[in-house]
Length: 315
Image (cartoon, rainbow, N blue to C red; front, side, top):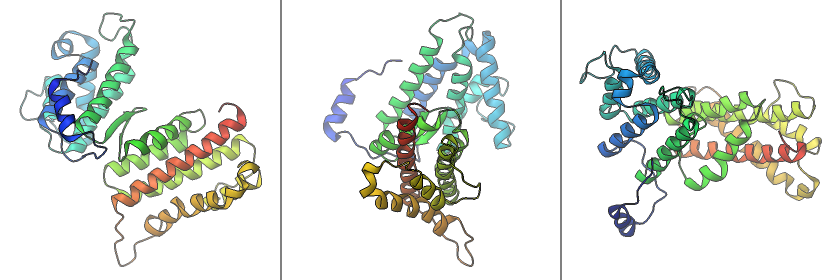
């Protein structure tokens, strides 16, 4: 599972440097081979899937899930349909739609999290099973980055990475806060926003982003026993937090700026671009606007989550 820094890689970096510009729409044949090899390490090889119950059931389950969701009887016409391992990996190699390829990758790593962490998965009672899965996930994310593909597997989901800096500074910390008990609703909405974004459903992504921000504020109100109504908007919820001194008095001078960001950022984007009917003209929401909205949502959740964590000591 080690990534070797080969001579050719070093020479490529020397010629072209390291870029924070990612591509999303096409995977090279070489990268697809790497994906197959990594998933074999995670879930088991073709021979493992033939003789061991754990890998056999997982590959059969993955193929069944994908075929049912796509409404097809076969994932690949290139191999026999009664060999799930071969069918899954053929799909991974030749499926032209990158989003569907990512469906397969995400499904495989979700299965890894669920089953391959068990000591008895490969009939070998591996005591290092969980550590092995962690190493496989770490390698997947490193390979994405090395190949310049803007995706990452985090918290059982594949996320699109638009900027490494923003991803590290905003998205991951937001997920950290929403993984605490009680934040499940906000977490599902936040993940839903990114899933819509990955599939090009831009207006739906903005709506779910706004919902996740509002849900986060409602959860904070509940944790602190501050009254609100289920229909309260973002503006009202922010006012409740302000009135209860949630934002420290030390930052009073910046209160208006913070309030403006929270009230005119995501809610206004949602209201102007996605929250109402298009009328006679279809309103197009660009990917750049959606990326901005998602990053702004994440930054606001990091702010709110950090203040709540400081207030309570621990969520």
